[in-house]
Amino acid sequence: MRKLEQLNFDNTFARLPAAFHSRVNPTPLARPYLVSFNPAAASLIDLSAEESARDDFLHCFIGNRLLPSSDPLSMLYAGHQFGNFVSQLGDGRAILLGEVKNSSGEYWDVQLKGAGPTPYSRNGDGRAVLRSSIREYLCSEAMHGLGIPTTRALCIVGSDEEVYRETVESAAVVTRLAQSSVRFGSFEVFYHRGQHEQLAQLADYVIGRHFPHLLAVPDKYSRFLHEVVERTAQLMAQWQAAGFSHGVMNTDNMSILGLTIDYGPFGFMETYNPAYICNHSDHGGRYAYNQQPQVGLWNLSALAQALSPLVPEARAEELLDSYGDIYSEHYVKLMSGKLGLTYAGLEDYTVIEQLLKMMQTSQLDFTNTFRGLSQFKSACGEKNSVLRDQFVDRAEFDQWAELYRARLKAEPTADAERKECMDRVNPKYILRNYLAQAAISKAEKERDFSEIERLLVLLSRPFDEQPQMESYAAPAPEWARHIEVSCSS
Ligand code: AMP
Ligand code: MG
Image (cartoon, rainbow, N blue to C red):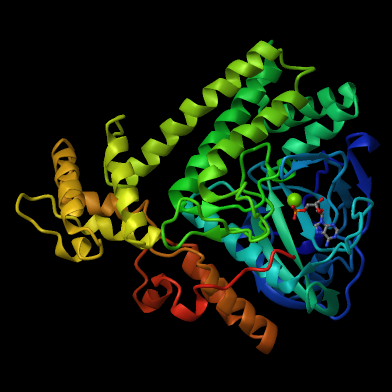
């Protein structure tokens, strides 16, 4: 484990030509204080946890001091925002300090979010508020705990400096780690500017860094697109199975590695509602929960268009056509797993769909219903009363239970063993909005960060029973049902 000054930077993205980024230093923030530090993420860059106690740590991760061998820059990209192409976006408030190569040879982007204006800030102030930084920090680690590909979060450092949103809030910087911060929009910007040489250079860079097995194949660009299609389809299936809504699936927020990136007004669904919209400025529901799989495809089409100078049109179409099946296969597999089925057949779709329909009618909690399902007793004559009583239409439940029971008969596993498997895929704990909100309120009002710590630990083991934390598995209490998460960040 290393000290701050010894982090092993090897800045491959910074070595790309100037067209790809803008060199920019973070803008200092006064009186930094530690909000939270995540030792699990620190180990990814070989950073010793003891370093978080140093003053230098605060100054480095709020952007007041530069780490030796870092090479700060903001990345250029474009993107389709709510369907409209915006020709230049770029990191308006994120600054990539560089890439750390760890002792296992992995590369991790180390990026400060909220570290001040960049050449891509447009009218923004380059800052992030404490509230949204806490949400991003907790959610990315919660997603990791759930086994969903995501950026990671190293720490939050706060400052007393004011940031103006709907109200006056305080500034914070969250340090994100990612194997790559390249987005679909990173390709779109060069395609739409007609800079095909840079487009190919970026594709070669990404393939070399992240898909090295494709370097020697003749149709490497098509194969690359194929892998992005697969990863995106898989990610969408994982989001759906976890009841997660991203909220702003613009192509500039789509990772080329299929990671969950750029957490904004995201939400974990509580009451099952397929039309759930977590972003309250998304009036048309473009990015509603049930739209995500098809938006994934829409975004991939935008990427395919950007790659059209490198991937023949017919091949791209074929790849996009394969998305639906890849998605469905992953989705059915994940959902069957949530029902404790060890293999997934097409007929299982009916069992899944019927259950979801009943959950919707009965307005049941998505997470807790699946978690509770592991109690299902498959013996004939078993009423499964605790589960059954949650549904408004008991006769309908009984019909479904018969179907499920019949399906379980074909399984090699007994009830107890199945329960164990189900509890490993159906989380007990998710980042419910009200839990995040409680941690935010304490942090904002009392400068008490203990709740952030508690959630970080809790959500790193979302599948484990943690008896002393039982109340954190409860759906939002009445007072918190209608909290609207501000979309400003
Ligand atoms: P998002 O959808 O939140 O990922 O952001 C869309 C674009 O707006 C990105 O280019 C961001 O860098 C930029 N942006 C968001 N907030 C700010 C801000 N406060 N200052 C500067 N740029 C911002
Ligand atoms: Mg973004």
